[in-house]
Image (cartoon, rainbow, N blue to C red; front, top):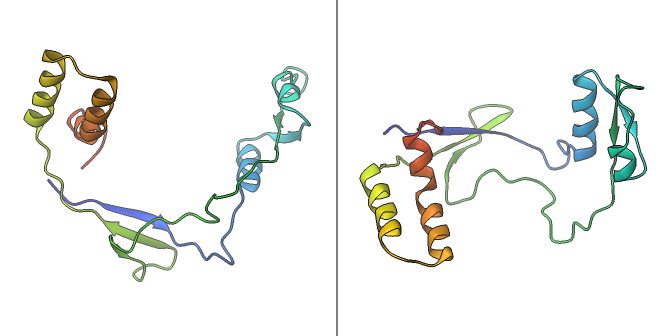
Length: 141
C-alpha cells in the first residue's frame, strides 16, 4: 500500500470566508445561467424554464445555524499535516492502510451465516466500507 496525501485550501478566517450564497450564485453564472431570485420553494419548483432558458431559479431561506461551525477545519492536531510548504494549500499525510479482502469477506460470511440485528449490519458496513471501496477500485490508495 502506498501512503496518500490529501491537499486542502488554506483559508484565512478573516479574509477567506466565502458564503454558500456566493458560491451558488457564482456557480450558476459560471455555467451560463442568470440567477433568478424567487421567494419560495414552490416558486422555484414551478419556474418556467421554457420561457426563460437562460435563467435559473434560486431560493435562499433562513436557517438555524446555532451550534454550526463558523468555518471548515480540514485537519486536527493529531494528524500529520503541513501548512508551510505552499501559499494556498496545506496537506495531510495519511497513514499507510493495509487492506485485507479476506477479512472483509469473512465478516460478510459471518453476517450471512448468522441472524444478527440491523445495527450490527450497519456497524459492519461502517467498519469495512473503506476496504470495500478500495477493493472495487472506487477509492485510490
